[in-house]
Amino acid sequence: MRMKHLFVSIAVAAASLASSVQAANITGAGATFPYPIYAKWATMYKAASGNGLNYQSVGSGAGIKQIKAKTVDFGASDMPLPANELNAAGLFQFPAVMGGVVPVVNLPGVAPGQLKLTGAVVGDIFLGKITKWNAPQIAALNPGVKLPGDDITVVHRADSSGTSFLWTDYLSKTNPEWKAKVGAGTTVKWAVGVGGKGNEGVAANVQRIKGGIGYVEWAYAKKNRMSHTQLQNADGAFLQPDDSAFAAAAASADWAKAPGFAVVLTNQPGKASWPVTGASYILVHKAQADAAKGKEVLKFFDWAYKNGDAAAAELDYVPMPDAVTKLVQDAWRANVKDAAGKALW
Image 1: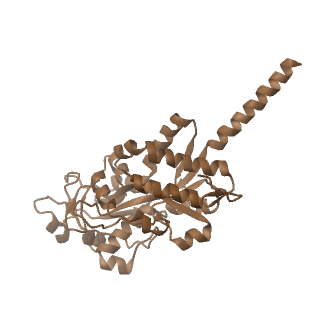
Image 2 (image 1 turned 120 degrees about the vertical axis):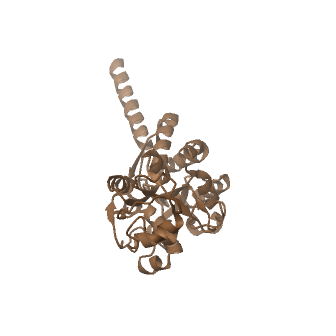
Image 3 (image 1 turned 90 degrees about the vertical axis):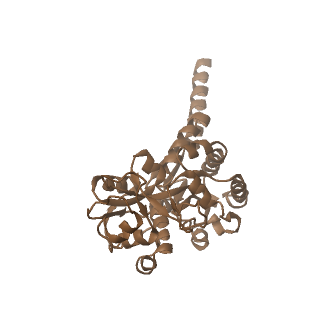
């Protein structure tokens, strides 16, 4: 009888332990832009805490849909949602990390980082107005560079994408015709080109198509050894992408005054500022039906703020400054609550 009771006790304890472990595993979906660092953080966090994160790199648009539908514990978007959309969906938004979007090309004979482009020229390429790599507009920016006469093939995102928002927002700020005809958004009516799903799809098409040009997150470009270009920034300087250039673009951001921390970092002033820089945002419900899951999401990003900076820097992301994470955590306390209205943080 004692042995039977012991078996029952062990079974109950095991079931309780399995339940608690399962409750600590969280799910997220959305932006491809931060996927490399979220994957790295998830591995590190699992080793440190035993708790898991399953993040689906499906694009910002899909992530927004999934968090609104409550099929994941958090969504991720590289386009910050406006206050009215957040309020309508009962969502709270905060920045997790910053990084850069870079143009990538397939131009045999042209060294990575050798080619110089401006927003005005890139806009005309993506409008289909410049169709050859040795066009006068490109040649004028690159004296001494032997440019091939290949056709240009534009590669863009086929899915709803925060990376596309950052890219098209930059083009809207630097090419008036692009702004008038296409504009900025997670999905736009592309003038020319072929689509690819996610950073992976864009990268695969650029690598496959001689003369291709597309845009991907910098860590992804580096990992896949893609050939990038220089870009001209708001102060007229031509820059190579790196984490110091992304940090320079973020330095003047006023997070405290932005509703929902909605700061857009494209074409920021400063000679050292990379022109297509952005923050990646996390979306959670203000009223958490599952308080344990909601708290675990906050615990994960608190851990990342405190322990993930070195990993972020290794992948050429820019960690959020301590002053900003303090603002974010104060906002967690004020906005993210359980079903009874009690703060989770």
